[in-house]
Image (cartoon, rainbow, N blue to C red; front, top):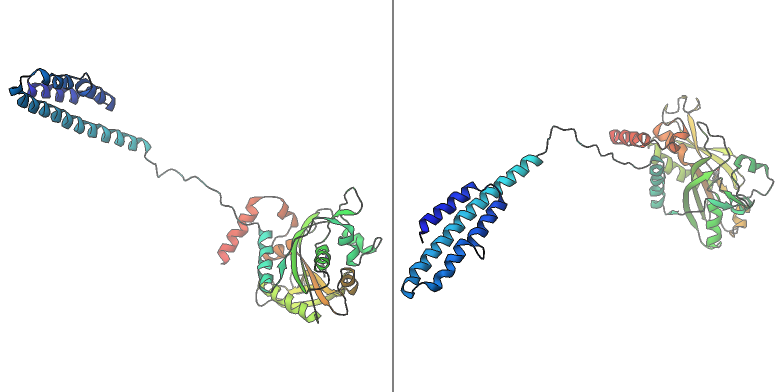
Length: 348
Ligand code: DAH
């Protein structure tokens, strides 16, 4: 056996190998069970004892020689393959990036959350009420009996039974909360939610809109508590220089009733198109809870008194973001939301 010659052959054959598969074939050819080197190795049994040592050394030389050549080639081929792969997968950084559109919070929800966050710091609970409401809660307990003309202004959608309707205001949640507390505990709650009316949709009317109701019932509550609370909300939403005023009004469930006005943030009270040249903008209806309502809902008016208010959520958002048409909120045009988000970011 000429070890050197065999090693030369192996080297030559290895040089010609182009792929890892071919290299593996070569390994089988030499080192496999029936491989050339393995068979030579097996022959050691037939070698006379005195030559066995020299034969074994030669075999080791051969095996190590093969392994060195094999390992080098393997590494070379693997590096080659990796480079090829990297070249194919290289990223062209001059290509335009994939545009991943970012979502942004709904601006109505944002306004509602702002009011919620503020009022929670003042001890108010945020509560929920059903959108399909009973006539009793939406009207009767609120001092609006059947046939009362005040119902005309709040015509809504009725379900099969006349007694069920889509609530025309969030005020029924006042009645629900008072009844739940059974005339025993003071109440501070707000309830934001959807409301419905049979209005023809136009720039300022929508058959579906949102209100934020507020109710506070306790002992010795007066109109000045309402004024103070409203002042805090108005300054929080529209800036610290905002002034507030209460204007007499009429609601069936409050006595006295008021409209809550803020000084026009656009013209600072001088008069402009937004405030219709009055210098003031109405943002909510409110008043002292009517004794009949307290009584209807289990609160003794000789012990308890309270105030209530109702904001239109869209109106707040329209004023805050300068939106001219209430239908904007229900068009599901995402550019609206994203636009206001950008506006906010710029103002921050
Ligand atoms: N629910 C009234 C409306 O939809 C708004 C309102 C006025 C709510 C006075 C109140 C309130 O809680 O006290 O027009």
